[in-house]
Length: 88
Image 1: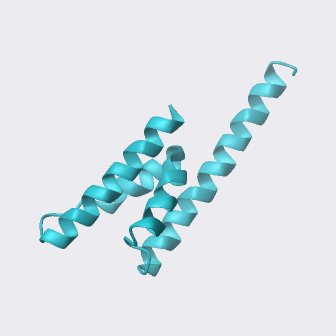
Image 2 (image 1 turned 45 degrees about the horizontal axis):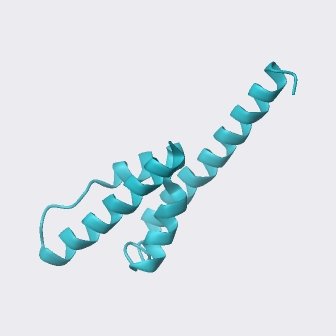
């Protein structure tokens, strides 16, 4: 599941870059933030740096990294709670 969310993040960023170059309507940023929050930040960061898309937008990056950190905390807490519940 994490791989598919990351792949979707990569595709959305790539499409948004193409749309930006052609002057088409862009992908709303809330989709990028939502994907980052549910774990799609790995390929998201790689794509942002690889295709140099949105890498100079400080406001976007602050929000994106906030979602990244929230995602890490969320998944870490979830794993901790599950391991405590299952007595592992």
